[in-house]
Image (tube, rainbow, N blue to C red; front, top):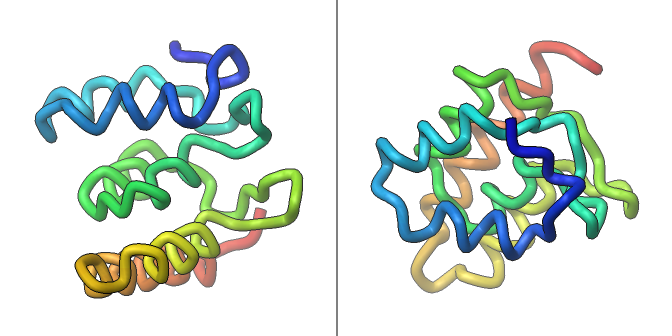
Length: 112
């Protein structure tokens, strides 16, 4: 299993951005979503930062990534979806909203 504490978020993002959806999902199956990266963000935050709805949905619904996990500064994955959606607003507004809706619906289902 990939242990995020051994890498930075950027290395994780680089690892998934150029993979096919199938290969990216296979890669995500090897990730410990409960372990933060060296920069104290988590793999789910990284997925939200790249605004990939399919991979985020897969991580949340199939791999059961915790939508309540917070960075050392207190940010949840849905916060990252908002932030990075704003940064990429011109092209990715619809994706950001889908990500936020997905994450917030799971946040309402239960608290960790």
